[in-house]
Picture 1: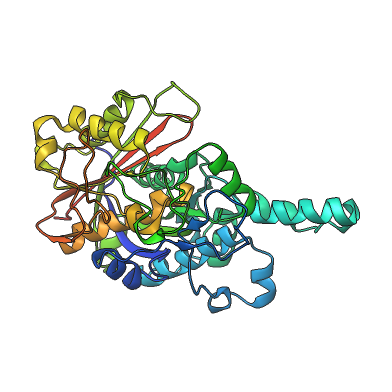
Picture 2: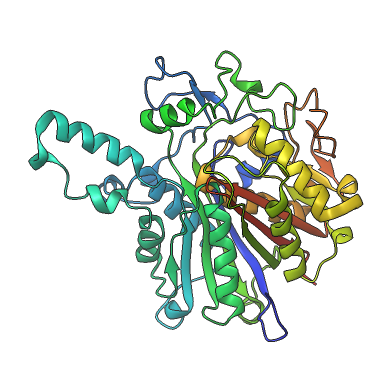
Amino acid sequence: MANSQSKRVVVTGLGVVAPVGNTLEEYWEGLLAGRNGITPITRFDASQHNSQIAGEVKGFDPQQYFERKQAKRMDRFTQFAVASSLQALNDANLEINELNADQVGVIIGTGIGGIKVLEDQQEIYLNRGPSRCSPFMVPMMIANMAAGLTAIEVGAKGPNSSPVTACAAGSNAVGDAFRMIQRGEAEAMICGGTEAAVTPLAVAGFASAKALSTRNDDPEHACRPFDRDRDGFIIGEGAGILILESLEHAQQRGAKIYGEMVGYGMTCDAYHMTSPHPEGIQAARAIALALEDGNLTPEQVSYVNAHGTSTSANDITETHALKKALDKHAYNVAISSTKSMTGHLLGGSGGIEAVATVMALAQDQIPPTINLENPDAECDLDYVPNVARKTPVNCALSNSFGFGGHNITLAFKKYQ
């Protein structure tokens, strides 16, 4: 919890690689336009899969950021993370040098890590034998490499870690970075989430769990959070990175400030391996903890970027949780699921959604929930259907909930 001795924390830089755009500007423009990023899978032959659609990143060229040899030694999830981090540092105009390197850290979460490398190397092992496996297999595959290689690339020698809390990982990373700065353990943090799990095995696994949409003939309308006709989530890929700084550090260098991060709530359902608690009790408590942490009342909340996965279990549970945490004010809050456009980036979702939340705050614009045509009777809040909304946003929350019962809420407000 925050106390009177805690440092204030502000957002000074943003970077994104996502299914609706590979820069902050493209991503934000795409969200406000209600652009669909869900398409038939092209990264592998999905013709034998039950689910054949995904939120793929299009046109990403790693050689814009790295030399070819360097790029070949990174799994795609790491490429996304490092690229987004470089974007965010550039946006923040933050130079890391010998004088400040110890005070800049990196926390980047992921749900799965380098699963494509693992799949490819398993095939090599089975067909060509153990001696033909790559010596880079392990360092390319392990989940911490997004944070580790980002630090190597930019020279950040401060705190460094990688939460692996399924679909809450990106939000955990932002929250943990927030705490580091509050406590004075770093002056600036590169934080967010990344994922690149549009692979044969990952898609097969989620499909076998009946988690994915099979609306293969209509990818444009497949992701429909809070709609009665939803039939599962759509897997996505990409990364979202924020630069957080202590207010003093940002002021000293004259940084632009998008907004202030004020709260972080974290709980666990302790209920089921994959299903959320149907009443959303601990999800509601995570929201309440984030508000308490930020000294906010429910009535101050203008916008919630929902977890909003387009699954029957999540959408109803999250609606219950919002009603519990915000009470009657839940009906006055604008809520949207940007997953309706990007798909579900798993461990990367908290990163790109925190970016969207901060942009909503900074620009007083709320991205829509697209494909919301027939609201579920149990989902009766204001989900900003289909069209972006221009309206004052003074305080905004971002929710992330993950397999294992992880519940995270991040709270941001306008900097004053």
